[in-house]
Length: 372
Image (tube, rainbow, N blue to C red; front, side, top):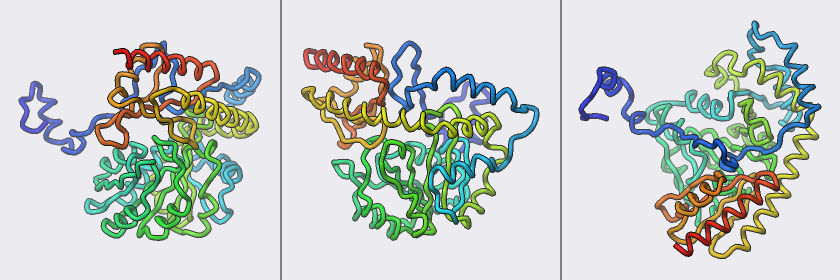
């Protein structure tokens, strides 16, 4: 914006007062999905049974909306402490989605000369929130198989001495579950915080939660979004009380509203439903991967999340994405010019019917691209 011809006084004021690095950013984009089968956002595709919905609504009718919520969400924190098997001497803090917890952490350690480090590619909000907080964001490219490059990570830790290292486990967007030994080596070498982001823990079959006992500077981040509660916007941060006591000072009062607290507590009382849904997604993930791998011309990557990354034939990624969208299915276009994500697309595992619709759109799109 700097140096441009301003059309309004507001534009001139924006150019003067908004930080240049914010002006240079693009806002997080959520594509329009009306009338499309939505398989782009890693959501759980299953709703609750009607009788459970009625039971939930009965609980909500007893909520007093004229009163502020419990500022620390004590009842819900205690339930999550037990449910997620957080070590007894460790603490839990809740946020308005895991995004807010990432923001709270970066704000708590922010200084202009400090750095946040993460693999690349990774969850896009690590970069955006780091820049919001006025710090430097440094990335370490993943290997060609989307594995963690241990030696490159260790060199970057020594060179940049990051205040925070974010590692998504499994990785978004690849679905790769990094080698646990590589991750331990990074934790042991890190000078500051290491945040292991387990957003997809319901599908991964692995966790670093027990390692909170071993590493005082380790925090584990989770969300209820992928468990079927994305609309509640509830994130969970677990770790040493010394850290959480400090970062909790940055948390705004009443950040988890009363409807979210009550609804999450109710949902977690029906854990069997959530576990059955996760099991169905894991089963259908395997079926979908097998069916996709049988199609000519695409590369399907192993996943321990509720989505599958795949690579289209060379030069056809963006066109294939548009063909699938035109067929009524919305997935995620991850194509970048760098080699690692060139022609890559990502599909969320949906219901069996949604998965079948995607496969039909994928087959037709591949045929169109090959013929065009």
